[in-house]
Length: 127
Image 1 (spheres, one colour):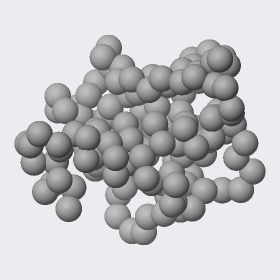
Image 2 (image 1 turned 30 degrees about the vertical axis):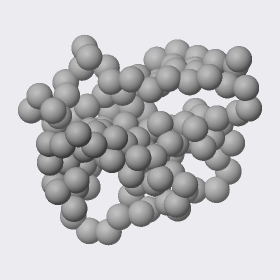
Image 3 (image 1 turned 90 degrees about the vertical axis):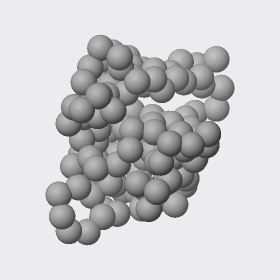
């Protein structure tokens, strides 16, 4: 299905991001998540809770600083889908009056350029 949705078209990127953003709304997550930091750190656990069999890869959270993480995504999914998952996850567990950004780390390897992983930068702050 992802290969079909990812075919070059006007809406492919937006469709994949939108599908990814829905995942944190419907997927099973471990209990007790009450912050962005915890959510990012348990994303890999939730990913494995919602999949069966096969080599599915990982989502690795790397703390860079207070309210600053890198998410290294090594999985078979399109990068735009991963972006949507991370954005949706941060939005779901974001405290009120908090602003956040999710961007591709242009200095890191990228699956769209043949690498095994893509890294995203996640930052947030109270408004």
